[in-house]
Image (cartoon, rainbow, N blue to C red; front, side, top):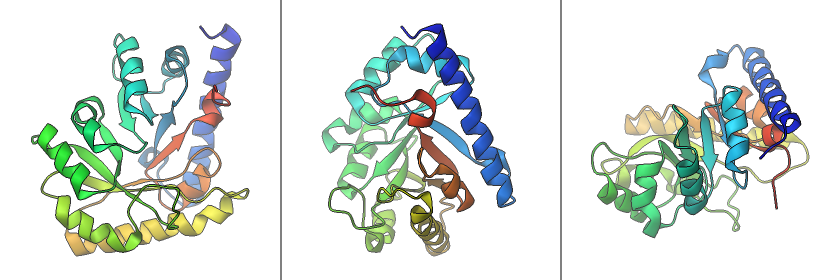
Length: 232
């Protein structure tokens, strides 16, 4: 159970992140309300999520299905929680994921889309396509050249709302700017080519979310800046 000091810290950090988000949006003449904050709660205990909830947070992102399921069950008494899957999803876990998350950020194959479609054909499961923008072998996601084909192969099976990316780690958040700008440009091109709105851009984390907002992010995934360092 977090101490009152820890609870107060989470509330103060959440307020600070929201203020930084607002300033970043206003710098580029965007409405701050056009950007949603998803708290990345991987490894955080349910009590930490309760503290963030008490401070006004409602959207939380988990990386692993089993960990998320345990937290969802432990927090079932809280109204209005909205859960996102922001980590890689294995096809054999698609059925459970389809019914536990309001948005899956990590669609990366037609096979996974088919599994989600079988799990919940109607209404279709909302997803984002994860784009491996830098072609990193260590990361999942679709290469930029394959995104349009994946959209066409899966648009009848899942509800594709937009794109997600995680740029390579860098000490300077400005190093991520080109990757975020490229994802926005890709989204604009693909929206025109496919006729889908692709209105969501999930990009930006603790170290670079302000740059992501300046480049068009509609969802930022922030954990450490609110919860502190992850438990090991």
